[in-house]
Image 1: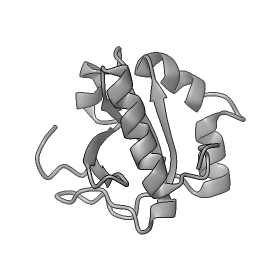
Image 2 (image 1 turned 135 degrees about the horizontal axis):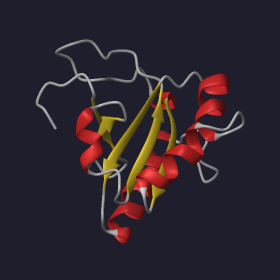
Image 3 (image 1 turned 45 degrees about the vertical axis):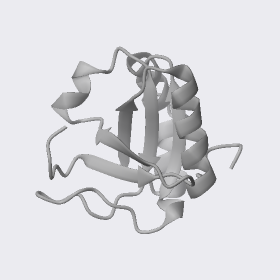
Image 4 (image 1 turned 90 degrees about the vertical axis):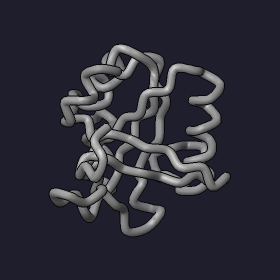
Length: 127
């Protein structure tokens, strides 16, 4: 991940731990799409050159999901008219998809739980 990249999003969980995610259109994503990780749908207010992407308020994190294989999950989330991404855009104003690699299932589940507890994403049933 490049320092000071507009495609990087940092989110802090309820525990205070910070997690970093990369915009799905960033070329760096290709290196870890075949593995497990976390997918974020968000409403980003700042993704200008030389600035980190930011959200205005906790409700701008629309969805946090873990996936055993990001490349396999993204098409399911993106390409159907009633899919998760279309719903996030249409109903909640999402404008960016982010992913973060995380190969350990327990650590991944803990991270998702931590983020959901802090942001209460509207598309997470447990929030």
